[in-house]
Image (cartoon, rainbow, N blue to C red; front, side, top):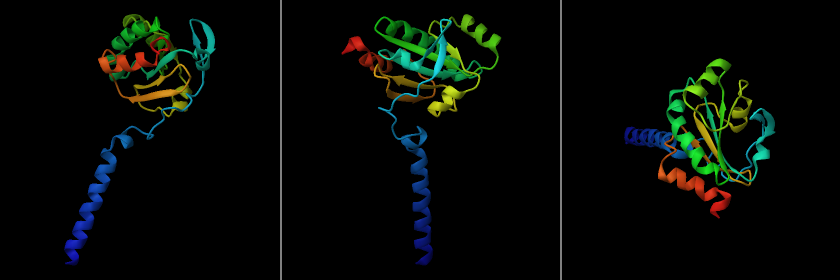
Length: 174
């Protein structure tokens, strides 16, 4: 009887551990960061210093990436297309690269015809302020400067669901 009870408890314990690790909230980090103010940071866009807070009023699809990251490379073309779709309505894709090689980064931008604004953060302080350590990772920031959604891993930014979601946040969509 004692062996059956111990065996049952061990099985229940293993099952609980598996369920915890398999749950989406565990795999996605924080249970929910939606509604939290996006951490502000300084960057340079089009040769001018600015801050993320200076983009308030726009929807920002903030994508952390690197040229050496194959899944990041795969999603670049669809991020380009998303940027083209939302830019006229007050949205933008903003890429933050963690590449250390300036020449390799610049060559990548040209070779892949990246049309959305990008910034190279060799210190990795910007992604760290968001809790990002694996790439790609994307934060969709609403016009109010608050995080609407966090997305881990590569995405098809042409998907109807993602495009529709981003468009619902655009100032002209309301």
